[in-house]
Length: 333
View 1 (cartoon, rainbow, N blue to C red):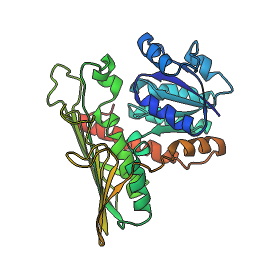
View 2: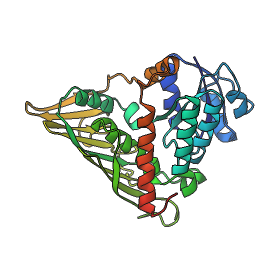
View 3: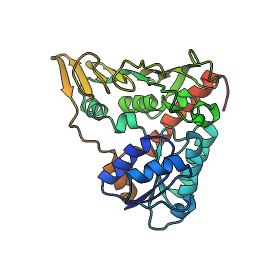
View 4: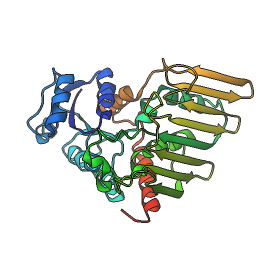
């Protein structure tokens, strides 16, 4: 199976490439119009040819999968173009930046029967989250009744590109970062529908960038569970990683807490899982847990199945994030 990369505006592209390469796919070509990004990318993947244009890759009949980490507002249009030309797609999150884009994606995906997979990296690339989902599905904490997902990030103002500060380009903080937590809420509760009860966005500390949103929160609800999401750009420089991402999953028979990227002032490394149940408390090191997403996605492309993630789940997580963004802003963008 061959894949191509079109647009490399976010470093998440390297994790996406690793997923499909490690699963056995061949990296057949790439295209990026930005000279600086292209030079760095070419140095990292010297054996992979750069195409003359995006269309050259989209029209190549030997390529089955398009992988992209384009500017967020450009991901859905690229995905639609790829699906219409018979390609499956793996997009970085967010996979859409407006409810209209999402509606267009849903329509074209239905019309073409192609796969539009959004790589929710805080689940698929995080070994502790993979392990936690296995434990929950095995009944380790009973029925899940609540999740609390925290997604703090370090803003790193100097290296950020201009589009990062434009609302119509990045989509808003809930659309962007909180799509991770919406995905995890659905995955851990097993819900196939949910509602946004309340949502907030704000610019608390960056008046020099008036379109930036540095804080956001969402309250989610299903008939059987609730979820709270908080995302922000306030990770202090003193932390040894970009963010202290956490997830707490409360069940009727226990709870799990994930310290995904750092156990502050504690154990070294990342992917720390804490399980509390009737038997006691235990710490589980998840550093050796397999990440199945890449293998599952390639199998889905080959067999036309939905083992990595159902298309309905993929789009519903995005819909929740976009609905929350619109509610928080008091608009219907």
